[in-house]
Amino acid sequence: MGKSFSTYLDVLRFTAAVLVVFEHAALLGLLPPLGVATELSHESVIVFFVLSGLVIASSSWSRQTTARAYIASRTARVLSVSLPAVLCCFGASLLWRAGAAPGSMSAFAAQFTSSALFMNGVWANYVDVPFDAPYWSLCHEVWYYGCWGVLRFATRPRVRASAATIVFVAMGPAFAALFGLWMMGALVAAWQPRFAAATRRVPRWLMRALVVASVLGIVLLAGSSIQESVRAILRAHVHGWWRMRSAEYVVTDYVIGLLIAAHLVAAACLFGDARRFAESRLGRLARYCAGFTFTLYLFHYPMLLALSAIRAPRPPSLAAGFGSIAVTLAGVWIVAFATERQLPRWRRLAQTTIEFVSRGRTATRPASVAPVTLLSRG
Image 1 (cartoon, rainbow, N blue to C red):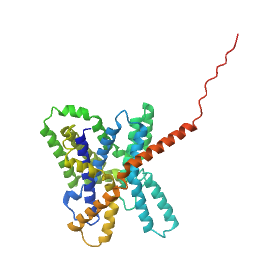
Image 2: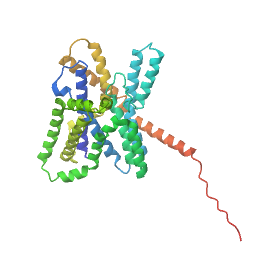
Image 3: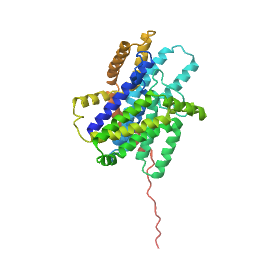
Image 4: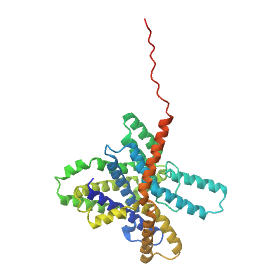
């Protein structure tokens, strides 16, 4: 993956996160509706899925990457932000429900356990993190990381097929239905050399047109009623379709996923391996902002929710909306120094833990006994 293309992915990632913030600020009554600019949060999550498949597949494709390194990297990346977010949200919820009955506290403990283990949304486990609605998509991501790890690092075909099937069934229909979006990004990563060779014969203006057309297609789809209409048809004709929850829009989600994949293929061909954009001021700024995108995604909603509660019941306004977004961005930037900016420490901790567990398993294995051969003398 070229450095400039990698920087462009940082731009897409940060832009998608900001669009999620915009729609949530409008939904919470801070920002007045701004047309399609405040209607792209769902499409942005699909962008995250496809980008995740592309980046994870690209980084784990090299022969030097081992299963241990992959597990340590993914564990550190996820827990460095998710664990603080879960602790903060459940801590705030615990203070909010001080004096609750013991029965509700047991349900609260089960909710915390489910969230910490990324089980929210698995099959019929309809559990959410308090004050953090966007957490659902991270649960999808973690299961996709696990499924990809099995596909990538299981050496025996039968073991790979069996383990992948077990993970696929365990995650439930809603998660499994959207795994193809993640795999679209992985396929773009795997076939990128083929795409690059094929598009060398295509005029660059056509690639630029594809980049623009794919974005316009996503915007037009988000601004129309097509997604809601397709979901309504599925709810009317498929019994229990509402149980799919996060995957209720799966049909139109794949249309969006294909547009994103086409956009990435065209962008990769335009950027190539050139370093001009990566080394520009805009490129350096994009990489810096992308360094707290994960924190922005998981922490923006609780912050906006608090600002909305402080400001209620006044009507939304541009000043209040953009002011709240600015305060949220500043707050997330500060929080990121305790989360994503500590990623090297989390990675070392994950590596140390994996090595410790591995040594423990080796020590508990029974020593191999050499076979004894009985020789008879004649």
